[in-house]
Image 1 (tube, rainbow, N blue to C red):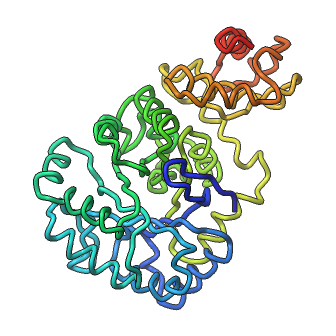
Image 2 (image 1 turned 60 degrees about the horizontal axis):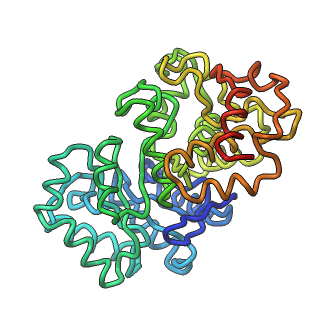
Image 3 (image 1 turned 180 degrees about the vertical axis):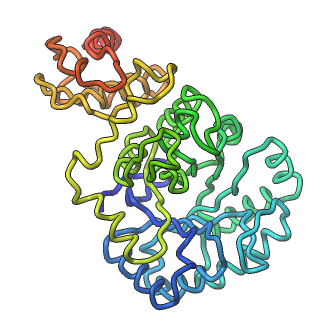
Length: 364
């Protein structure tokens, strides 16, 4: 397992977490074995927006003894009063659901209490009006909810709620389809979505990624909006390369699924290379660096993707980006203009020109 730090909370989070949407399909024995295996492999971040309430007792049994070694993302708005998942902005219903979840998880605190699935202005208005936000803030004051998160599929709504300054973690749907306006949750332009990721990086707000495989659509040629199948490893790498992202949360149905997903860490780099998406993104993405590092290796030893990332973050107002840039072993000023990166860039970015621009910007 590899880990990244949420700068706002100090939490050390595994880059592959555990999405629980489908684990309820496993029987009790399989669920227990899967959770035990996840813990053994260093998985420590678990999203609990599950599709069925049966998931919670399974977690309570598996992790009650190691509770402080796992991190729960629990949703204020996911309602399990009827067993299966439901959605609500009603404060009373949320209170009952949260109490029930805590009891079945055998815990008295929540690591990340999420404002759940706000995709419309009216959702946010109702969430505040009903007292749901007040409930969450009260539980934070009492120490039951340690940090506050938000899940959304819409950049503009996420930006609006981030403006409150309350959010420490954002759960957002990131994959090549959605980022390039392909798929059911492809909300916002490529420019808007990338700006959201950069804002999270700038403000230290971690991103946990949902729908990394677009509900499985990207994994099959017949359902992929691009007419080409991508692999799980390509989608995971794509999401992890986005600024601000701390963890990807694939949904697993059992131990076999989890073993396959965690194979990401031992897979060769070519199996993670998602540069094929450069053949089908829209015009507004052409010529832009997406930090995929398909241009590597650089003959001059420059980490081209990272240099571009710090430049974009610095221009977006991230005060720390310039310091990170200055600490690189090789900077844009080391470019020898050989053109190797330009020839290999699937997005047709003029990296040689970018290196000159970046070197001038940072004065190095």
